Length: 136
Image 1: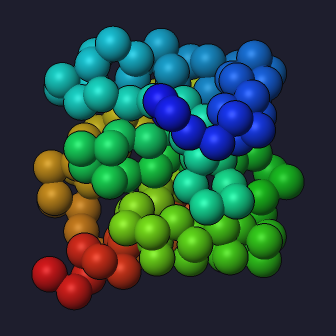
Image 2: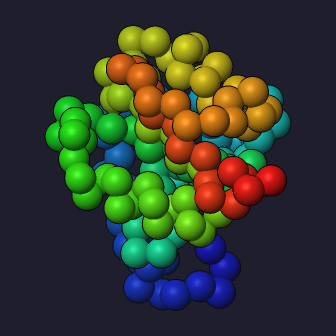
Image 3: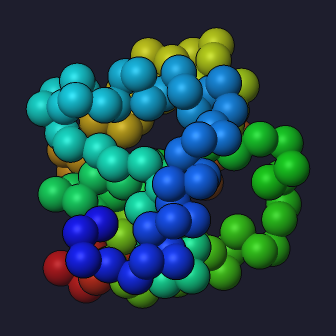
């Protein structure tokens, strides 16, 4: 985030230093355009929140959730804020990143390719298209 808000930049840098094992594992697959040439960044500030991973060209946020996120109302506000800012949100489980990584990566690619373009709430993932993409 060049020329951005210094407190947010500092917070994003701090968050990148304390990633968990699933985030580290997924970052290994996403960094350096390793996933079909798509560029991802970590801990991108969006409104008052920080996205775990974001692909700017696809306006996609990928959040890696642990069990503390199950049925958490705060995540709904976070997702709505990101959607209003033009970002689609894909939430995947921490355990799935570690045990079913190929499936998680396939789901990310489907969202980026437009094959996943409608709201989806499943046991293993949740996809919320941005408010902007729903109007197209």
